[in-house]
Amino acid sequence: MRTLHDIFAAQKRDKQGQSPQVLEKHPFVTFSYGGGSYAVSIQHVREVVEMQTINPYPVAPDEHKGIVNIRGRILPVMQPGLRGSKCCEAADRLIIMEFDENQPFCLAVSRVSKVLLDPMEAEAGYTVNVGNQPILILDQSMIQVHAQEAV
Image 1 (cartoon, one colour):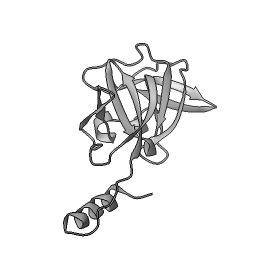
Image 2: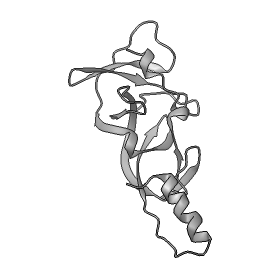
Image 3: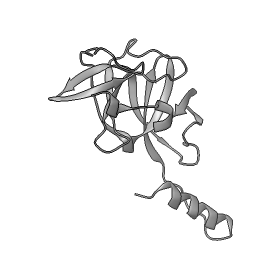
Image 4: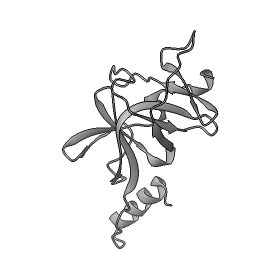
């Protein structure tokens, strides 16, 4: 699979007069969270599962909603402050993500789907229009996850 660096390098060569190159679309997982629509690169999504019972735990940071047991593995459920949203309202799925190796965490979301986006449009922090729906592209810093503190 080509990296964004490879794609940008190829585009730079194209602008310098070399043959045009068709850009590959990159898969993203889109979801609703707290009234907003978001997307994250599929490379960070490990699994999407049905909603599980979220068990709160004492003395947790604000961004930690609780923990879930997924096939014997205890994972933190994060509640990042995305546009002042609140977790778990009408959530019917858990997205298990992993930005740092061996540091998986979950987000409680609804309306999960997969979409292919142009890598030039799909940069973190940008909003893209998919089917007349604005979707914010997320990365690790925007989710502000500290999963290692959770368990």
